[in-house]
Image (cartoon, rainbow, N blue to C red):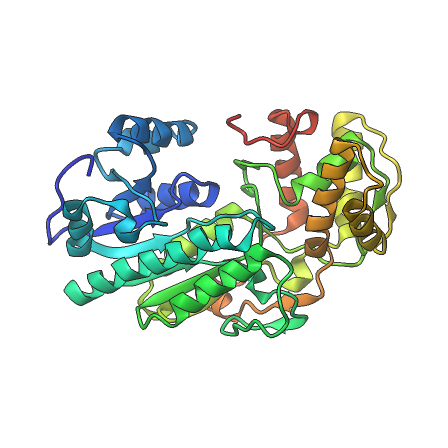
Length: 385
């Protein structure tokens, strides 16, 4: 491990997925709000390449880079491999020193082959649970915090309760199924766990910062840059947005709350606080006229078009690669903009208090940051790229 040698009396938190968008936000809070030593798993062929990857991922956060080798330590590892592909000395060091594990790493591709998704999302989780069991047997693990997703609900409709987990309705994507399977492993582990199910994570509510422009940003770009008038969504459907700062705050806080052990938390806005598709598009239209001087067409909502898009895209009628990719994107994302369910947040509000964020307040921040980064004028790339 880079930095000081771990000792049995040390209190260390291991975070997977620490270079990802959510993982980085959690690391920031752990550094600022706790006294724990932090360990992150990083892929790399050697220490130099791993350190380069870590610093590049955190280059917008100098306080994190400055803490490497002080309170932040890294190990070259891989959650998809047995014992995380660590040398035995490092693995045993984790067993002796960890008090908490926060598992955020995941393969987020919605419709990648199921076996590929399982490699990271389920087998990676099983490998992390194996480590957690060894820690617990050695001196007692205080918490295994597992980041799941609200979409383990799959095709279920109506009210979705936090402690409910079932595959009876099936799933909308291979990603959902793989995350359901990994959450099931965590629930059956007999460890001190907390499970977190975020909704559709968007940028920071105060700064708009986001690392990768996807999910919500994809249809917004089609509307803003290509003036796409037809929107294959139900205008009255709710969109399950949640700012990353709320998610990171909740995970960081609840990981160290003793009475949060054994509970599942939906990290979503209350249903009455969510925007409808029509309400969101109207706000975007007004904002773009006022701030960008854009005169966008009045949208026409055509929810039945999603099925037509699916049929067209699976046929040989669409030959233009760019058009085909656009239709694929619309087809994959459309179910997430046609919600027919509500997520109970009883557990979350019990610990975090009443949800007070208003999407109308933070939407301008999301749009301002996207414009500042030139997002609406280029292809799908991360902020760094």
